[in-house]
Image (cartoon, rainbow over all chains, first blue to last red; front, side):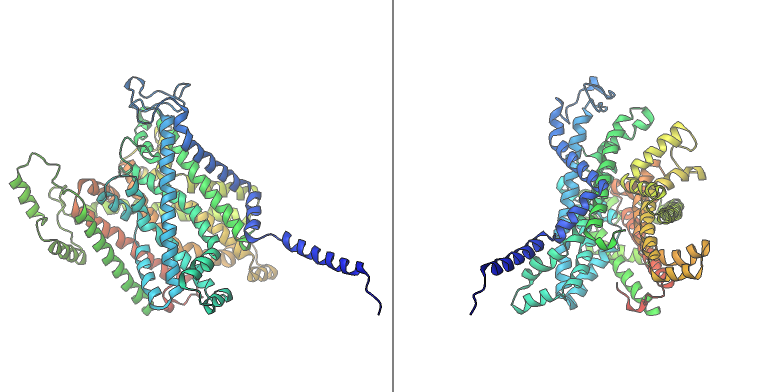
Length: 306
Length: 309
């Protein structure tokens, strides 16, 4: 019998290797989405602005030698200058420092409120959809009722009842905010729960929480992330509105909403910079989150690509 | 259809009952009462006042009194506004807010759809980008900031419109615009993406192949289908305009329902808060049902009997 030459084996093997390599090169869904996002200039601008705002909210107040609450009546209502970059307010407080303390509070409230929304909404919507039947019916009835209410009205009522403070605002906003997330998650999970991989886990004896957290929620992550990004500006806006109505963070703390509210009088008196800076940064933040959210939606949902 | 409306009506009643109970529970949890600030008044007088407004009654008695009030739409006398009932205050405030809200809704729908159409039919051209930049700015600038910009330019610098308060139609222009901007931006974006989706459908190709052109093509073939998603968001948009009026009425000093609500809150005027909260929720719930019915009428594919989404 003729022996088979060695080079035939090696050739076959190298062919297999090539195939493996090409498999490795195929990009995962998330990587693909990330590439698409990076191509989107507007979304990346938004992302850059958000990073910049977060950095400034951390270091901003330390750049200038004035604290956000230090009053100096001799220096009241100074226009922007080399000493006070954003000017001062009627109590002589440095607006540069106050703006970044305000950024801290606005961003913190916005992001925390949305994180709570997500946790509650994912659990509620996930369990309702997964359990189905009567449980689903009752849980979603509650959501329907809450969904039909004017949210800001409830938030304002809650703010009046609870002690004023940072935590209160977050609780008051999260109390109504999770409803939308619960609906979204329920819809996604209803779609996913009939999949074969869920059935497989069930057959193998995987429990509710395993299926929910290891399979259903990771697969529903795309819409959830989009919704998070688009909810943050909503939360920041709600906080600003509350502060504007005098139901926000207590003095001497500053949020962009309270600063805008305090600056409103300057429309008539002329120290317009007191209004301009907080108003500008609220709008910039909301703009950044909106365009990033849009970009994420385009990146994570290629079907919608136009 | 009837069965659907019946189900929705029951749902509406449950929602309203929920908001009544919730506002009541919240009200009774508020620290202090409407008379806390009147420090100089003797204790006996305070007690008589509380008696007069039923604040000394057991909590359940107060609750049922309020439920009865909501049922017969009678919320009793206001505490801070002497000699006026909550009904009278709502009756004076509501027409003002309604004018403001309807104008804002009209502006938002008209210009939103127009902007969306312009953007979609100039897809990826400069008009599209311009319209979408306007839309994203409209979503990003909060209404109260937009209101201050409007006041600064059109009322103070150019003096085209009065700065604040209420009276002639000129007074209502700036607040209506400020209230309309965010919903307008939202409608514009939705209209645009919806038209783009419809344009890729087979029946549009058929219509084009048959030689349908011009306004007939845009209105009958495209808009009729593209505007269905826009109708569905009119409910949430009404909510935005309703609650948006709290701030806008405050800025412009407009004596509408929102102002009474916000002042009721700071004055701890329980009957006024309960009355306005109920009224707001009732309007919203009513509007959402209206939108649902309109949805079924516009889109024959929707079977209303099925009810829930």
